[in-house]
Image (cartoon, rainbow, N blue to C red; front, top):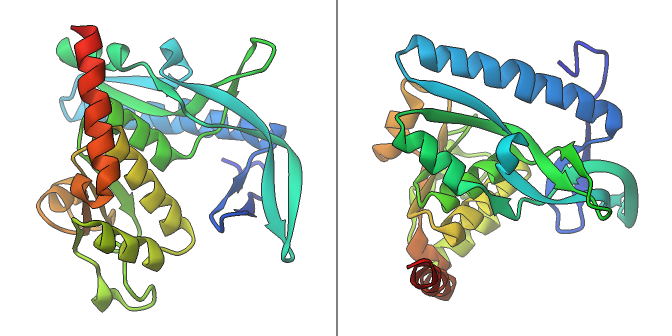
Length: 251
């Protein structure tokens, strides 16, 4: 949609070296049209055509994905760190898991996409961009569900230019560190999302190829790079303790 409107997507490098899209007001309008309007609707229709009772939702609906809006980001341009203003993105801090659980319990399959609900300092709400992988990670973590992140390669390669160096799995902290070291560019954001999902409650995350037959089935069957929750080490134990405390408070 952005290209059809004659707009050029702008990518920036964060201070931590992660590449992402910069979303100004004009881009945000096109993004909302593409994700919540076109893509979500088309995916929901495909699910329903396949016999799945799907319900399309954006992160704004019911406060499904919410958190503070970021109006400025730190970027690196020409080797120098700068503040770039006019950003329309946010950091997901809350997932309305009750809404999702209720739909699932009633037999519906939620199809969730950005934008998210961006909370302004004055109490206002603005639809803002959220990285799709990290949004999926937030949802998976909140539901204690396994997560599959699809991409255009077979998984994470130890040598990004050599498909024969696929890292099949990471179950320890050292193995996860090797995956993080190998992940470059957009793959770095997928590994970041994987860690967030595992910290949130997911048991495993698989980074796999979207271009194979039945990619989800293949990923859950062992294809791609599987990162286990145990790879978080002590962080995994802390997350489990936090979950136990939350369950105790709920009970």
